[in-house]
Image (spheres, rainbow, N blue to C red):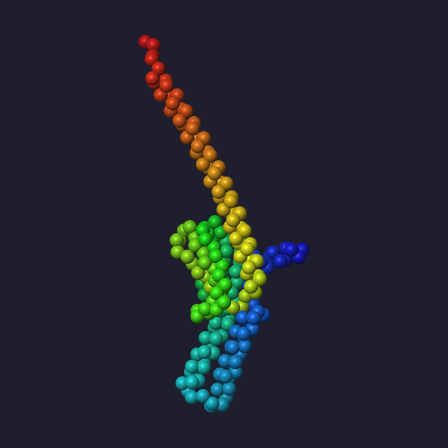
Length: 192
């Protein structure tokens, strides 16, 4: 029973506020919230400073809500990336040509982890960034599972391709033998 629970968690993983990045992000937005509340109650900031702190407050909460609602779902035939503010991305497993996980530590765009995915239908590499609220071991297990599925899928595709090539070779050899036998019949002298 425990194994099936762990497998479900690996197939549907979510970012969490109860991670190091989540705790730090929460602390930052709480401090910004306290500064804004104190600025409204007591006139300690100029109006332009209050405007800047208010913008930081809203941007901080927007970013925080976005990073704690990130979710990656591995379904039977697809991989989905979801977040509250942003586009949902669904990529079919049979269409994935290249899949790579990057641990970025910290970048200017706020991403800590990213997935690089290239599909057969689109030659461009999609980079899907993830925020800091992820459990690293959970992501590593997820990536290993996706790589295993993609490897097994490639082996299955190679076997299907080899079977199709073998069928074509058989058909070609049958056609060649028919062609040769028809040429032999035409070249043999006919009795009149």
